Length: 269
Image 1 (cartoon, rainbow, N blue to C red):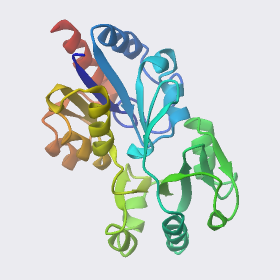
Image 2 (image 1 turned 135 degrees about the horizontal axis):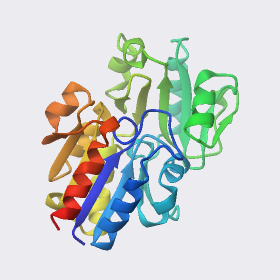
Image 3 (image 1 turned 90 degrees about the vertical axis):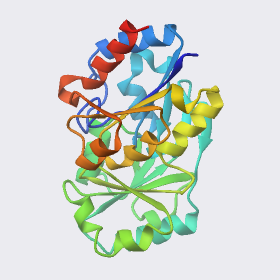
């Protein structure tokens, strides 16, 4: 193998909330050519498996998936290679605290599917209609789900960071890994999870070294995977702290900056 290529999706490859048909079809061709040359490609996202699969459907069987912000790693045939689970008591306590901030909606990310409170919510419609999630509305989330939970996400359409800054994040950041994923999301995962740990796991699984790994991202939750790579790129539209953490800055998402780097990689082979 010549190396591992890992890319975030939302804000890096496509705008937030877009799934099947959103990715420039040239990505599929270029990634397939890189795979034939010995590279491995992994799509890395806070999304669930199904949503990522739809985004990469033409080549999905040939790539790897880092899902739920690093909470699950699988291959294109949905064989789960690794998962990091939150304790049920921890999940319920997070839910109780989140309910104290009524502007927030709550999504539970399980291994099987996602769960929320109501089908009538803005979050449900966005996840189901736009992201293509397998999501079930179950009412009271504290009653639990018949599923292993790898992530709890809090949603607000533009102010998740501000609404959780006063007391919620200071309380929980010592107990779980809390990461901002765009202006809409605060994700909570186990300390053994995260994009960086997932990339490291996949490197070991595939026997690929850090120096042979290239990663792309745009947001706070991508920074830790920069540290797991020999070369990291932030897209030009990334958050400032993300660009500062990256080795290089490529073109923006709307300019298909990642695609340009991948094409350069093909030419230089």
